Length: 114
Ligand SMILES: [Zn+2]
Image (cartoon, rainbow, N blue to C red; front, top):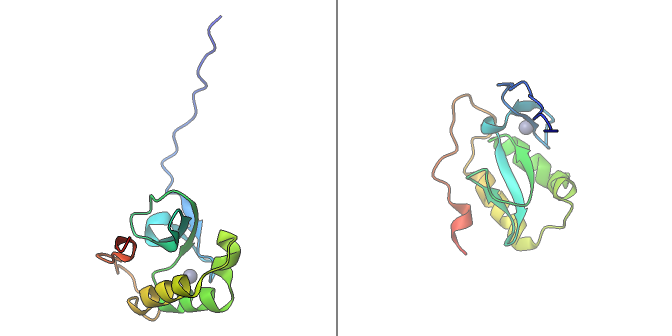
């Protein structure tokens, strides 16, 4: 007897993710991923790094609030080293203060210095 492969209806819905700072939901491409990977906590500009991830709006206000409230630490279930905090703060400085439509977060290579 051959097990029939269950036919799952392929939904084209864009995966929604929640910004850990403001709890707003967006398609994952509209958010920036932070990942706790082999090299510590870093901004995952590819969105594909392995490890536990959390999502944030590309808005400085969300990052500062996430850092201030330790939402990042909670979401990633880890503590941030001072270096990691600095790295995330630096990244936040490159973002617009609040969310702006159609503002792609491009060419930020935070992960490169390894
Ligand atoms: Zn947000």
